[in-house]
Length: 426
Image (cartoon, rainbow, N blue to C red):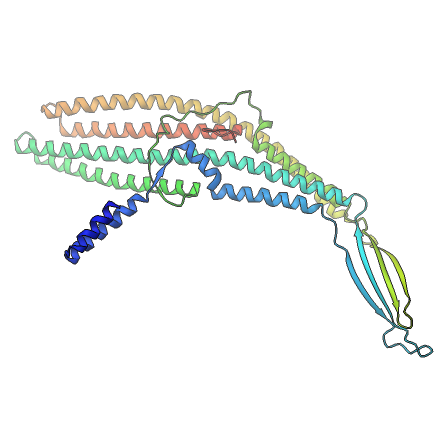
């Protein structure tokens, strides 16, 4: 509001159109910056994503649809109304019309447990969809942790590149002073200038990577405004939630989903076995005679005759699909167990790698400090200083990569164990 009032006063005082245009541009830039979305902490973002993420909303819609299908499976068949006119145009009998009109309502009943089998099958399908939804929520939360950590890592890499550019410019200015003093050759100045150009290119590349990772994070959580910066540390502070009891593959959402799908497919066998049973139709109606005002009631039964089709191939196909689903359960159990074992190893390795990277970064920082002191004193060559500076930047990048690898390993382990890595349980 302060910017708007300033612009309006400036325009009302009759300043030039150029000044007004500049003020409008400044106002527009201020508005765009004010609408930049602030990235919340990971815990808050995860809670927000549970309500707004398109992927999770899709899964929730699938659950509601499956629940509706289960309710629909219990609906009775609608009755049918039939109207039959007979003896139209028939010769008169004793001067009276031979026409007969029959009105009947027919209700079809499923016998042999067909309806109960269908209801059970749809209920188990609904349960399978619910199990897949729970598995999807766990996978999504852990993927969100990886995306969030990646965005912060890319941001930190940009900060490293910015710091490298600052150091390169400092070294360039120092080289200029030494060249002017006659203590360094012109070649050293060219080397320092090339180092500055390389650092500038690295800044541009890191900035593009940071923007891409933030946009991917924005899309994943379904935010309407793009995130511009990670303001809450996550890489260095991420602490995985450990399970309270012993881990079991049978308790993971991945295996529970496979078991639920197997049960749903197995229930379809009973549906196919009863599909050939005839449906009984009961008709109740009234017949009106054309030669009289009297009426008569009609009652009828209808049933299809399973003479040519007893759905034997349909039953066989359902049994084979059930056998396939059983094999998928065993495959899921083996895969989950193997993934858990490998994820445990990856977590341990990532912890050791992070410790080594942090120690290397500290040593590289001290080496650059001493090298810069020596260079300013004329005891260290520029080429040696540039090598030490590159080693420092590489050490910082290795630490960032190690922290990101640790988050990924913890997220993978949590997915294998069927829980959310960083945050509340699903």
